[in-house]
Length: 96
Image (cartoon, rainbow, N blue to C red):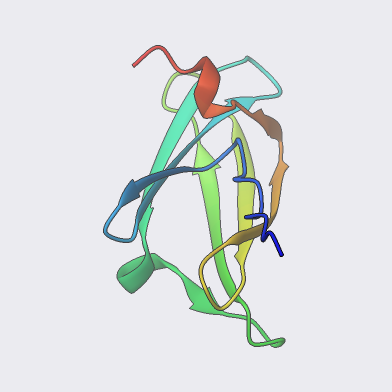
């Protein structure tokens, strides 16, 4: 029997040791905002017992606003990503 691993989410970059990064392009002016967060300091638990990261974003160039939500299961596998006020930039498209 073969076990397939769940495909990784293209919007979240796992830097190892519980550190994650993501980038968002704001809807209004197209500014890029990068967020870095860790399991131990930034991820909380929701009502269903899953882990969640929620962060308001604000671009420094034009003060565009939005909110990012990332839901994880108990093994810290990304279940769902949502952004209001922009769109995710897949890490395959990052320059550096």
